[in-house]
Every structure is written in C-alpha cells, then in structure tokens.
Image 1 (cartoon, helix red, strand yellow):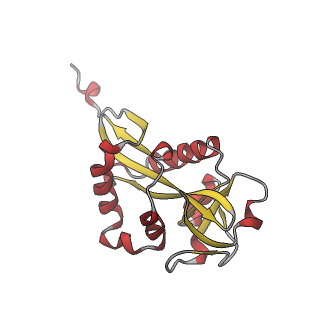
Image 2: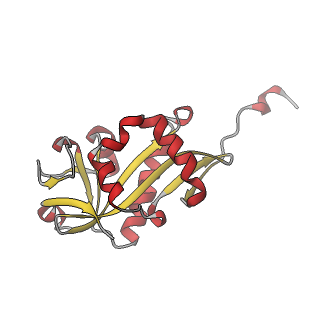
Image 3: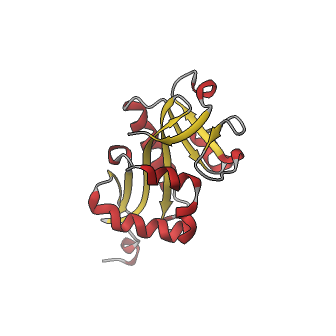
Length: 172
C-alpha cells in the first residue's frame, strides 16, 4: 500500500442520545467546563428535571463519542421552549464544525416537536450565525446569576420575543 493512502479516516456520525452515552457525555462536559459547571444558572434548571433524550444528540467519530448537545424542556415566561446545553466537543475534534452541526440538528428536532423557542446562555458571536438572537435585557429570570447579555434565543414562532418575560424553569 502506498504512503498517501494512509491518511486518517474520519467517519462522523450524528445519533440521538441514549442512556449508553451518559458516562462519556459526563466526561466530555467535565473536560470542557470543569467542576464549576454544576453551579451555573443553566445547570440549576437542568437539575430540576431530566433532559429530553429525543432532542439530545451525540457525534461519534469511528465509533468514539466525541461531542454532545442536550436539550431540556423549559417554560420561559409563557413560551414553551427548550434550553440548549451543555454543548461540548472533545478538544481533539474542535474547530471542525461539529458543535455547529449538533446545534443545527437539535434546533431542527425541537422545531419538529413543536417547540416555540430554543434558548441558551452563550456567546453571541458564536451562536448568532446559527440563528440565535439576544433576548431583551433581564427579560428572563434564571434560578441563579446569569449575564443577561449572554441569554440568546432562536424564536420558532413570530411572537416569541414579546412573550419571553419572567421566570425560566424546567417544564415536565
């Protein structure tokens, strides 16, 4: 076999999360966010109830899970939406568009399921090109401190912005 046929093969597959992914997702999130991740306001919402596995996805490279995104059903004011996150990709696979693709898949799935909005706390320069817009300053009250400039939404209905006022919390 000639030398030029030996380049690394990357076979990325995107799958719906299931319980068999829990351990590796915990490892990926630990690697990405460290031990302080459980104290964040968004994490407190996730502690109120389980995430929605049907809207949560992983990326596998040649059978190894290397990225994950989770979605949790929330009420945000009177908007029935989903909180996106955590989103994490192993350092070995960063800057390849895997995170962006996980976000795209999750938003599409939420839209199909009738979600009114996908909300997250994150960086506008990263998430803006993926369809996220800033939520009105201090419009949503999280169960813990959050930078109001980092609260973003993909509105999936025309009236979402005007209805994103009040408490955000887990929705059964």
